[in-house]
Image (cartoon, rainbow, N blue to C red; front, top):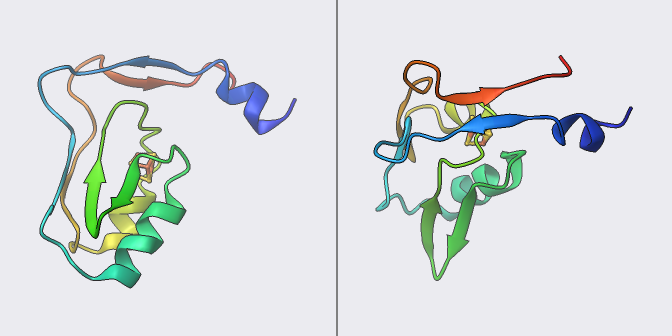
Length: 91
Ligand code: SF4
């Protein structure tokens, strides 16, 4: 089974009120922003008109952005509250 096939089984319960990841929207290091955009497997980071944008819906909670940003660009990273977030059904 391919990775794309496995991701088809992923279920999300999205926190509609609060993002578990907060970004610094004023962050302006273009090279670092592009690394974030390229590294997120869920393609949740966008670089539009010179600004970093982010949507937490569909986050795989892989932690890549947390490690990559090293406190810059990503201000805070936690797992979603309670039973919210991603549920992997195929390991
Ligand atoms: Fe993307 Fe992973 Fe960061 Fe979620 S934790 S925003 S999937 S890089």
